[in-house]
Image (cartoon, rainbow, N blue to C red; front, side, top):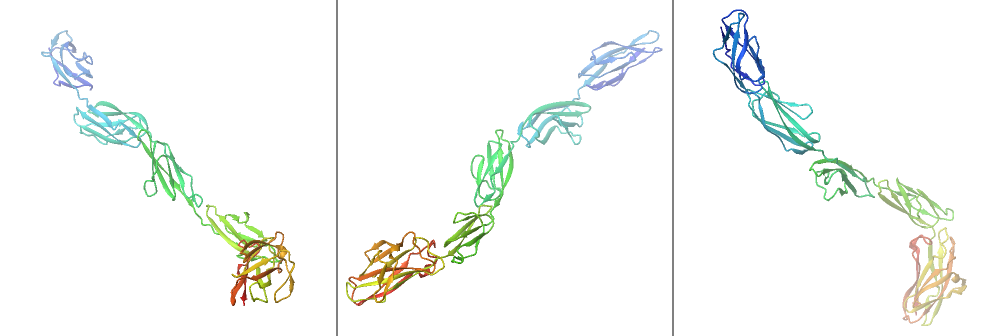
Length: 474
């Protein structure tokens, strides 16, 4: 009786193994046992002649088996059974991620070398979330996968390779830095009052601004000043070199301001001693009088203006003349011939208020100018005067004061405070003119004029303020 060794002599490490021994000769039921062996502990021989187990170490092993039958007869195999255990576990070397410190959203590349592959293999890559797997088995020894970095913090990635029922893993670490939280605001909108706005960014340590055309907005720090509308962007960087971008829109409110005054002109009379002026437009009003209502009432001659400020800060102005008093002057000198040096003539100056309103108190100013070779004189105490070539007339000299004299040829007189000329009334002044060294046969003019009243408080018409009279030196 003898043991018959099986013909299979190889096993794979970490794979279940089973092999049966048989016997010849003898009678009855066989019982197998090990005579000698260097088998690993994970393999054993049953009494029924089955060698089984999962080898966990590669190498060459042998076992000498004996058998006994029902009669107690014993037989031994003529040779030891040799078993070779091979290691088919795949290998992973050089598993790494490049770069290993990145910002969220950056591309990362995983590389490794896969070895000890019999046939093809499949792989999976994970870092705690759903794994990424190979689309199909592959035989490539160079592993290369490009991903996008997500999450933040230190992350551990595990690469698992499966081949022929064998499995191997390798790990590598990656640091993912979070992106800065970019913020960008502006203090717009642009208006006529605010012609530029400031862009203010936050969230990082460096800032780069661009306009809606992609052009860089010059400047430094986290602010920029712009004067045009549009969408502006900022790229914010942090100490890790990570960047993020956000934008803000600068709007503008440049609605043009428009204003007019109704009526476009007005005349004050005794019948209508006041007039209402209405500003027409949308916005805030400011009159030259300081009033801010849309409608004002005026009782004095002058040019009135209003400035409108629109909601966007734009301004527009309009003005309107309001005419009231209207002074005109005449000079009465019937006898205007001066026979010889020393000749004296008396004359009358009449200042008429031809409009319907009185002049304002004490504001009227007139100037008399005699030609070269003559002098003028004025006495405020006179109440009447005998006009040369005419009659004696009452005069209002006491209402006037000489305020300036230029070589007695030019006299400037101002109506005294409290005095005025009624609407439709007049004030008469008496003067004397003396020929001094005027040439014989000379002809010249003596003139009188009302000083221009640009504020129109006593004279709203500047077209009739001068009167001239020709005098002769005989």
